[in-house]
Length: 120
Image (cartoon, rainbow, N blue to C red):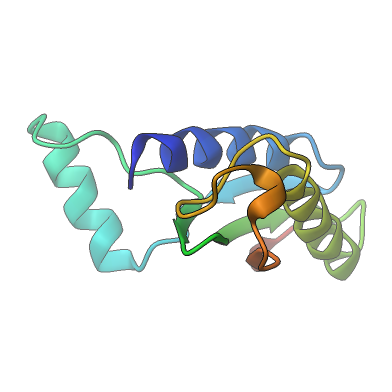
């Protein structure tokens, strides 16, 4: 990831933690990548992997987040709220995807996937 994508990933992780019903944020990368990233982090070869996966190209954001939800808010409602908040953040002008000269020039809507990885 490039530095702007790291910044967006960190901001989205913090944002997700403020949503009612979100109990945890889990790594969204495939398990082998998480394990290898963890090992490389321990040897100080790379920075720790971000929990929220963010990429951008040709004026479009792509985000994948994996969350755990508690039982106080229905999982479907929590997942929908998480997706909506991510889209709001990305379209608010807080960040510009690669290939866009400004947030307003991002012609494609962000592609956001929120996975519910744990309930309870």
